[in-house]
Length: 216
Image 1 (spheres, rainbow, N blue to C red):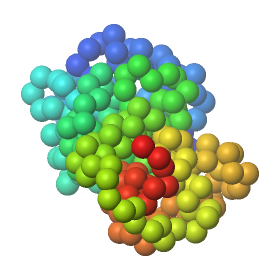
Image 2 (image 1 turned 135 degrees about the horizontal axis):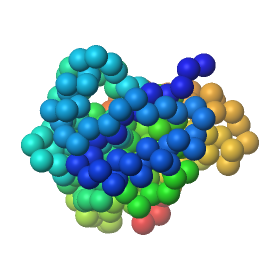
Image 3 (image 1 turned 30 degrees about the vertical axis):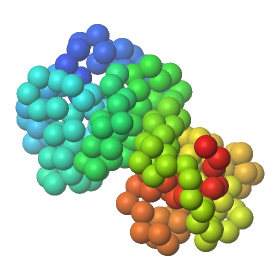
Image 4 (image 1 turned 180 degrees about the horizontal axis):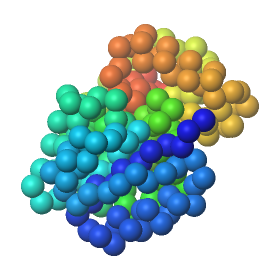
C-alpha cells in the first residue's frame, strides 16, 4: 500500500514547517508539498495531486473555505481537512457546506492530526470533539430544548455508534470501544447516512439531539 500524499496550505512558514515535522513521524504519510496561499496551491495541482489537503482558513487572497469550494468543483477527489485557530460556528458550517471531510483546531495534538489524515483518506469524516460540541450547541440554540423527542429509528448497535460519533471518535476508535471491526463500523455509518440521507456527520449529530440519543 502506498503512502498517503499530503499537501499543506498555510500562510505562516512556522506552521507549515511544524506540521511537516510532525507528519514525518508517521511512516504511512508523505508530504508532497506546501503553499502559503491558494494561487500557489492551484499552480502545484497542475503537476500533481495530494490525497489529503491540510488547509488553513484565514489567508491572503482566497480564504480556505473559498479554496475548498473551488476544489470541490475542480478536484473533488482531494480530501480536505481544515486546520485552523478559528473554530467558530460559522467557519465549521461553511466548511462542511464547502465539502471538507475534516475539521481540527490548530491546538490539536499530533496523534489527532495523524488520525484525522488516515480517517479521511479511508473515506471517513473526522471532526474533533470540540467541533462536534459546537455543532451540538448550534442545533440546541436553533431548535430549543423543549418539545417531544422524536423516536429513533436506529438499531441498538447504530445507536451506540452514533453516541460515539458525537464524541468525535474516528471509526477505528469506535471499533475499539465496541469490540467490533472497523469495517463493521464503516458499514453501519454508511447505512445511517443512506437511511436518513445525511450529507455529513453534522446531520448525524443533529439527529442524536432530536431523538435524545445524547443528553444536553
